[in-house]
Amino acid sequence: MRRLLTERYRERLVGVLSCYDRIIVTGTLPGACYAKGMTAFLSARQIRVFDYPRFAEPLRDRVRERAAELAAAAGITIQHIANSHIRKEDVVAEVLAVRGDHPGLVHVISAMEACPTYKPWHSKETHRTFLRPATGKCLHYYFYFIDAELGLIYLRVPTWCPFRLQFYCNGHSWLARKLTAAGIGFTLADNAFVRIDDWQRAQTLADQLLPAELHRILDRYAKQCCPVFDVFAPSYHWSFMQVEYATDLVFRSQAVLKPLYEQLSRQAILTVKAEHVATFLGHKITPQLAQEIASQFATRIEGTCIKHRFGKSSIKIYDKFALVLRIETTTNDVSTFKHYRKVEHQQGPASYTLAPVKKNIYSLTDLRHIMLGCNRRYLEYLSSLDDFVAGIRTLDRLTQPRPVKGRTVRGLNFFSRAEQTLLAAIQRPAFNIAGLRRADLLPLLARCSPPTLTRHLARLRQLGVIKRVTGTYRYYLTRAGRAAIAAGRRLTEHTIIPALA
Image (cartoon, rainbow, N blue to C red):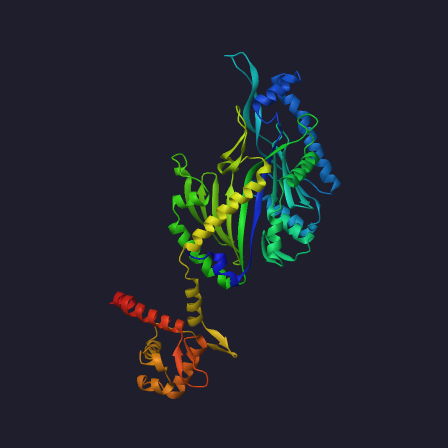
């Protein structure tokens, strides 16, 4: 098996980092987050089911008043966005450019969006009155904060029961604050580190995002922005809605990553099969999921992206700023992954067995190991693909013009008749043992004067086609020069000339 890319390009890498990226968490109120629970809640308080809207309206007003209070205290005007094509992230980025990134409330955005709700219903068959699940639209508030620990976050708060919250944070922003606290210098571009003074220490810190720490922060923002705890449960239940885990290979130069990524992306889209995608994500192909496996090649402003999807999970590769090669596993349902854990049974004692990952945020640590394994398996596959990057760099070095001592030295032109004659003469087997001199080449190049041939040899030496024996005027072909000349002649004689004939 070929060496991993991280080992093969060790000298050309600044560092490697695996870290959580996007994390979206859903907050639900126990006992009120499903229709039967809310029906029982109303019944226990002797509230008629058909009075449910009247019960919910004062709670709606509470959320609106709290949003106004928080905005006024921060000197912010709530901005309503009616156009769904306007990206909230762009609006907040403009505010941050003026405000700065100090902790506190950044902006409050309101928007009319779909939300889960309940509908009063009376069954003529059973003569029972109860709430049924339904979907409606209500005003939502997006509270954007700069958190002292997590960086930029938002909490999405609906103004209607059952007040299902949505929380967003980014693991790279969290790690940036950990690095700052530890006194480790870094450069963060967008959501990728292009420089860290101590990569090993950074990886240790990245592995220390704890569920209890996240839970504490979530509860604090929920109580601050959604004042309904005195009516319902004392706290929210937090579960994962979407999780991304990224492995970044950070290169020293764009000249190294660009040809490598072109090779990997081209081969990945052509060679990755359904069974490969299932293996990357630790799944098995079943008849139910066979139709949900796909690979996609997308071109974005930032570059190209190869994405392989399996059900509600996916794994992709893309480059950021032509410096960072990112492998990223994403899931919209963490329970599709399985691991060995303690399982409680309705009958009998608990046992350790292979079971789906729990959706609550306390699966954060186990999920990191699982998703890192996905990235690792994809990296191993990419490392097994053909790597022609060294050949691309050599070809560029031989054929591209380059500045030498204040003047430009032109590269090789394998299709020029004069160039072909010169290279064929240099390639003669008679020169393999003793090397060649200018005097050896002059009889073979009748139209080339001694001064002109001297300039040609100097140019070939500067391009790396030939090398001079120290202390002499004798030259040998380099390995790259020998391979390039042979390939050029073979391409010309066996492909181009027959095609033109």
